Length: 476
Image 1: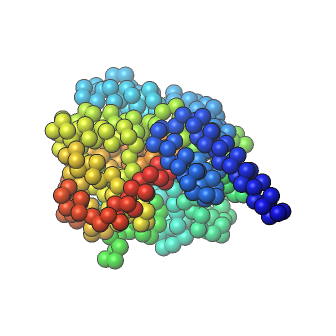
Image 2 (image 1 turned 45 degrees about the horizontal axis):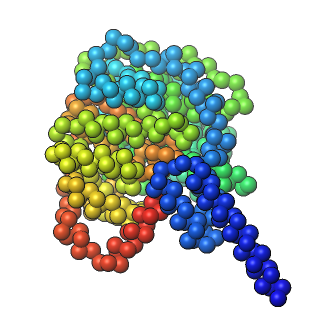
Image 3 (image 1 turned 180 degrees about the vertical axis):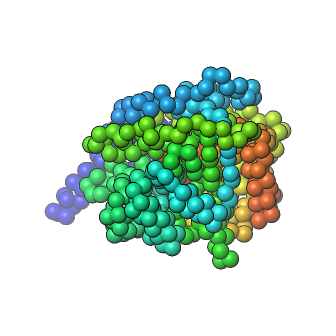
């Protein structure tokens, strides 16, 4: 008898909790697909669903644990250094896109830029180490992952060498991205005089408050004149070997856009170190110098979870709508929001050559099922889909019409557009766009093109796995 009473008391409490969580989800007015996904998870996954919601799903808590007012305040304090030269001649085709990014993300257009594409970890590592050892004043690094492996230790030791020379070195790493990295690894740097800050450390009891909002940016600024941005973390797996072929892209930037990268880093730095007085800015922004007669126009679009709009998603959707010839997309994780999917479908149905490249085997079976669940939607609209079979594709790039491209940290998925801190470089330049397109076309040689008729012959078991995974893909 007592057992039955306790059972019904427990069941009643659980029912009230579940009903409360469903009410919270409905109250937040999320995107319909995310609302449905969370309601299904909470109701149909006993215990696991509610626990997942507590850790990952409470949007209401964003503004409580990410001080939106302070973030905007710090950003605004630096804008005077970052305003666009009103004399710049804007590319007519993308004038509205430029205005959108300036209004939505404070991503002011920068001229006088030289951009070098780095498409493998070895080239990136060599360029980074050369830049680090050439530093004269400061080194700023913001990364999702820095591993305690051969590459991570190589970069760490280089930073220690420069710190001993009196160079100011600051490092932001994501606490979740570096969960498996020991404190001793970072303590070695702090003992050498390097300022190291974890991004929103996740510790009990604050685990449920912060774990869902991660800093996925990969930004490096050296002396205010050299910058890196892209998809590469600081880890050995990003350096391709015969066994592990890793495809990725990082930009080496010189010119006025480096100041935009610097602002993003400093905003994050001061946001994380709010108890300290603001650092002196005057020496951190290099004086403008002509780096190239044929300089590229650039915007650095950053996004964060408590912003009014999904800045990078808006930028990509608008750019796709301006295409007249082609749109090529490379992404490791393709779980697009409805606006992004529809933008690609509309372009393909309008006769634009739209191609999407994803890895055949992402790093996780459920991620593969989630990716694959969107393939048929693309194929039916006339989008060409390529799956990389030779190596792992980690590039996050989009190129349009040989005159515009985007390279950065954001994947084509819900998490990058809504929950993560991300940064992408948007480049208005024919030469750079052509190089990104050539990378795509070369990578096609490593891929298998997917045909709709063949795709539909997948086993029913596989289709069910994909459909079930897709239901929860907005939560990944």
